[in-house]
Every structure is written in C-alpha cells, then in structure tokens.
Length: 376
Ligand SMILES: *Cc1c(COP(=O)(O)O)cnc(C)c1O
Image (cartoon, rainbow, N blue to C red):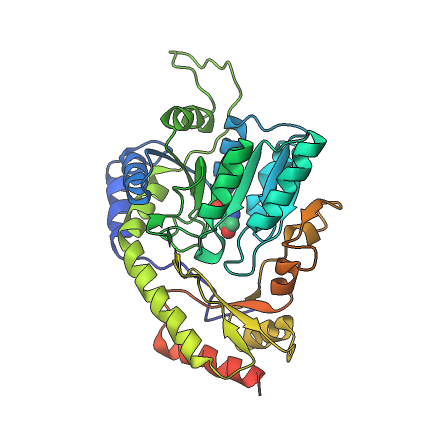
C-alpha cells in the first residue's frame, strides 16, 4: 500500500544531522562515545530519575530489566493486556508465564480492580508474580496513584513500559519515573526516534550499572576478554544517540504540535457517530496517537482503515489485546469486572488516526474529509 500520510512518521528538528556529523568527524561510530553519555544524562534529567541506559530497542530494555529481576522459567509476570507485543516478547525469551490484566475505561490503561483480583488469587494459590509490567498506552499515563499502592502492598516490583509515553505527565511528574524500572522506545514511529533504540530508566544506579555491563557482552574489566556471566549485544550506537539528543531537544515542540492536532481532530469530527478519545484530568498525554472510537456500530473499524488506506492514508485498528493473540495459548486473563471486558470493546470499535507532528494542515483536512465520507 502506498501512503503519503503516515500514522506517526519520523520528524527531525534540525540538530540531529549536526550531531551525527560531529559523531562522524570524531569517528565515534560505535556502541561507545560521548553522545551516548550525553543522551542518557539529559534523558534521565528530563524524566526525573537518577540514571538511564541507552540500548538498541525498547524490547531489549524490558529484557534487561527482566534479567535484573531474576525472571526465569515458570515465573509469573502480570502484564498490561492492551498493548503492543514488544511489551511481552521478553516473557518468551525467559520462558516466563504472563497473566494479562485488562484496562479500565478512563485511560485504557491497566485496571486497578482487575490487578487487585489477580493479586488476591495469586496469593491464595501461592504463586505470586515476580513483576508487574504496566504500560502507559498511546502516550497517556496509567493511574499510578491506584496501581502503585496495590503493587507495594503485595511487595512486587513494577516495570513501567513508557515506550509510547515519552514526555507525557501524570499529576505533573513524567511517565518513566513511576515504576521501579521504566523503559522508553525510540523506534521509527514513536514520538521521538533514534531510528531504532530504547532506554532503561531507574533510581537504582547499581541496577543500571549491572544492566550496562550485560548490554555490552558482560566483559569483565581485564586486559583479555574474560566472561563470568553471559550478556547481550544491546547497547545503543553513538550515531543513534546523536539523533536521540537532537530529538530530545525537539520533544517539547513535538508534544505542543500533537496537542494542537488532538484538539483539532476532536473539534473537526464533532457530529459523527464516534469521538476522539479524551485524556483523563490527571493526565497530560504526549498525544502520541489519536484514537477514534466509533459508536453505534455504524461501520466496522477495519472498513474505515481500509477506506483511508485506499486514499493513501495510513490508519490502524487499536492494538489487538494480548489475551486474544494466538501466540499465547489460552493465557490467564483478568477482565476489568465480571461484566465488562474493556479492551476487547475498544479493539472492536477504535482506530488510530495519523498523528505525526510533521503533518500539514492540508493533509489533516484530507484525513478529516476522507473520514467524514466513511460516515456518510
Ligand atoms: C514500541 C513499543 C515497545 C517496543 O519497543 P521497540 O523499541 O520497538 O522494541 C514496547 N512496548 C510498547 C507499549 C510499545 O509501543
């Protein structure tokens, strides 16, 4: 399919190329170098955590945290159900067992009620999870003031998957500062990109130091190559970090543009049988993607996506919940309530609209025009 309007394409601010050239001139074209250190320091500062580790992807970042937490074969991990598979792939790498938790209707993030029920059962069965993996979905924060006390009560560490929420706030604090560990993704379609990359963020400097060691093949500090543990080749390159530094300087502007676009969509689509997903009050979303929820079953979401695609516009259905993915064979799943499965409902009604901050007014108008055509 040939698109000329994309869901969330890369958008460079200008400084990126300058920094990449600097990296070339100094010949730091390696998973070491000054831009990596700068990118880590500036990102840790911006998010409000003590330390950060730049790696090759968000998925790699989650995997490193799993290793630190000692998650292994047969260990249970409570996971947000409504998310992208990158959240959960490390569960396979370590042969752990996911238990999926539905989302709640307001933020579409992990349901505290379902989480509490899952913990009660786990306690009864004597099979407590090793970690809870909570996603800040589509750039909007999870309800941390409800989720964190539950996890603390049961003494289980929290991994915050802030892959989609770089720069978003919850009650004035940045996403990525709430979990014991948090991760970012800088993949091509995320709000900032290093072409491919990720970050582990934490207040625990010792843990970050150990993950840094594992991410560069666990080389002991000796003159020859000595290995007492196995590692990974997960470190970010200095070139990617140069791009990341430029993107970080551009991030606030990108969020400003996306917020405006969010308001524009909400206004322009008034009157159709559906609405643009609003953000809860405590949340300052980074507006990574705009979701259109279609009401009254007037048209199937896939049909809208196909019609937009035929007009050269990239759109996608909302994430297909993890418990519905065939790769997990009949996994355990906790719905929001006995009567309500929230994420299945969202999946069958909502689509993601083009939300890139490089979109022109004319392109936006075209998206609106094509959308309105779908609703007659
Ligand atoms: C993109 C994404 C990931 C994976 O990040 P990569 O950098 O693509 O490995 C993980 N979780 C969520 C919620 C994501 O959207």
